[in-house]
Amino acid sequence: ETPAGATNGSATFLPSTTGGKTKNALASIMGVARYTYNDKYTLTGSYRYDGSTRVAPENKWHGFYSFGANWNVKGEEFLKNNELINDLRLRASYGITASPFGGDFLYLPTYAVNTSYGGAAALRATTPGNDAFDWEYVKEFNTGFDLAMLKNRLRITVDYYNRKTTNMFINQPLSATSGFSELNLSAGVMQNRGVEFDVSGDVIKNQDFIWTIGVNAGYNKNKILHVTDLVDSYPDGDTRILKVGLPYGTYYAPDWAGVNPQTGEPQYYNLDGSITTAYNVNTQSNTNSGSLYPTFTGGFNTSLSYKGITASALFSFVSNVMRWNNEDFYNENQRYATSNQSVRMLDNRWQVPGDTGNDAILQKFDLPRNFTSKDIQDASFLRLRNVNIGYALPKSLLEKTKIIKGVKIFVQGQNLFTWTKWRGLDPENNAVYGRFQYPNTRTYTAGLNVNF
Image (cartoon, rainbow, N blue to C red):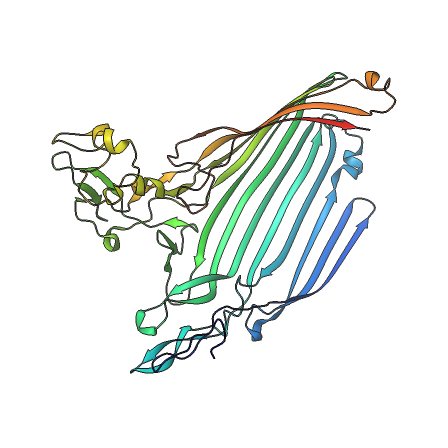
């Protein structure tokens, strides 16, 4: 009798079972040291020794360290009595961290039994494994300062970082003659450099009224420095490329050249700049469409407080980011005409010779729609993230109850407005592409907090 979950097998297929079990472990030894001299100079250091089952045995154990320094400049004699500057601290650090690959035992070759060879049952290799698989290392230098001025009413924090990732995990495509689709490598090198700052200040501050505003932003420049010793580029998914000198997440697609006004045919740019109606993703693809990871991120906020009344608002933004709008690809495609389609298929589709501009955003209905730069759209946005208005009952009133210590009534709204050029449901919803994912919900909340 064949056990449940197992196949009987045959002359050409070995018996097999379904299901699976896996495990992994991480062991760490860590030490931290800190020394402060005269309340002004602080040195810190740490060291850890990690071992992971997700790394090939020869690289399983590795040590990582970090060290940093902090200088309390305000404690120096030349600044101690300065009334303009209330606090000033300079800091710098350098360290190495690492992470193992996300899967278990990927360095081992694997086999499957559900195959045959020459009419007989056989084993088939499914993954090649990689006994040189290593940790992915991140080396980072960081420096910055914290500054408080004007009786702590103005607060500034600035940081600069230079982060270099080595042994970056890459899925190398393989020739079909190898019998495998890809090989897991730890070979890439990537650099991230950028600046982050946070500024906040009390514009008005007195006994009854406080108005505070703040802004924070970050700029990041990303670049691939190395792919492998053999090549300088690899496909990265269906629509992107991993290429030396370009940002991680760079799109790779033919450039859209609009619709031929006389025939309604879709047009594409060749790499030499000429226009053609013949589509060839292999010879026309380029890296002109940007990256799915933003260059600028940040937000700003403001809050008001007048006696028991409080109000606050928070905005966030992302800029210089592109995303594949897979929704347009399906909603404006004759291959899926039996499903719901965009109104642009009615109003902005080429119909008669001479149609241009808004009358010919889309090609003639019966012609195939191909993936081009038209589908890679600006996903930058500014979002009103949160608004909160509240009122706290006066303590003089609550003291009469001798029981209640605090009462606050509030109303709050989240994700109230979004300003964006993105044509999909939500520019923030998915980091890779937009494909009908449920958007961030607009939420309204009212509440009552009572403390006894």
